[in-house]
Length: 545
Image (cartoon, rainbow, N blue to C red; front, top):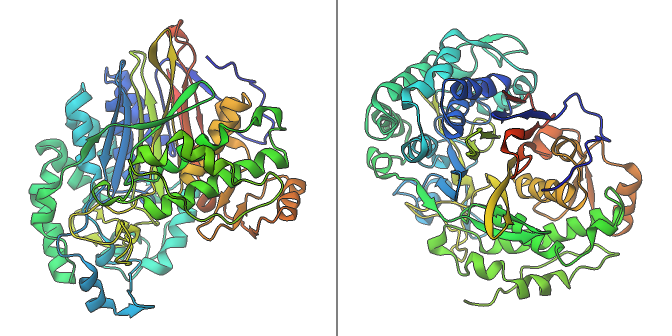
């Protein structure tokens, strides 16, 4: 196992947490909800579901009952992958959007908010699938904390309040939004009490009747009726037909470990491509926070995104396979394009034919869960179904309106997705063993956060909280670069001198993600348990016993 340098060179109010049972989330009340379930005899999956349900209440700007989810679960012997991302309503196609929104540049216009961005919610079905396969406690027991918080109310946390206020001007006129998320006629201030009684009612219904009720019972009927009233395309049939997918995780070896991601339609493969490229360079020989190491990581990430934005879509529509995109010879050819002294604007290659919350939980039985759920942009579509607390996501924005793209919009199809859980394993005496469950929230920042965290831990031996707290950069879709305010000014100037185009960014929450990490301390001494970290860029907490 890796031996960390436990010193943290970055300013932080948090220390790593050591425990045999641990939950790390972006909000303290959610972490405690998961921990309570572990204390009651539940396992890490039970804890993850309980924490996820609580997060829909205490961090509604980032996730909700109308969102999506993905998970990686180490069951004690094997890694499992779950894709609970939603699909487009059956009525969606290019003509649908052209008729409603017209064209620009020869392509259908694409809305950013409202009914025509809302894909079928996957998160509740994801909870159900995880519980059916791995859960120990009754499903209803996992909703108890979330119901209590929604009914009695909670004092709004600092960063949640900040993002809530930022979303209101754009969303206040969306159907149902103000009635649920503007309890004072505005966004709540830090520490103000917020109750979500409609949300609690839906959670109670799920606790009593099971998660499938969301897709076939009263909630589904309310969603479909409100869609008809508001001119949306989502139907009761769309909801009833939805099922999440169990998938085989994809992975890439790096420095003696294997990093695992969910396969497309998600962007996790971007982190694996970048790591596969960096494997060709001797990063440990370069100063950890110096210009040469940072430049190589940025260039590898740009190469990865060039391919991901071109090829990743619903697997049924992809022109190449993940295996082709991760082929060692292909990645070596991509690595050869990097100029160690100069930034390059990369085109996609030709592989040979052949607002989000993240949480993690681990228990002393050896089960580890990497889980992520999201409404996409803050509060998603902005549409909230009256009487339910269900805020629908806007993942439809992930589709392309280009008929030539494998990611072109179509009914029943899953869009390109940003949210990605991750996991690290190692081979010891011929068998695969778990090392770390982790993730980084924040749109396109997610695979970049994975890359930067992994490099810091595996190449440079930084402990999880330090790797989490370190200043970050972010490659944008136009291949410009954002630099966090704490990033070394001298290195930033050196990056500009090498040709990187840097933008000024003042908001670390939105632009540089937020991670949670749980690392298993020893294979030989399981009683040592885990070390956990929670990102200071959110209101989070790592807690254990």
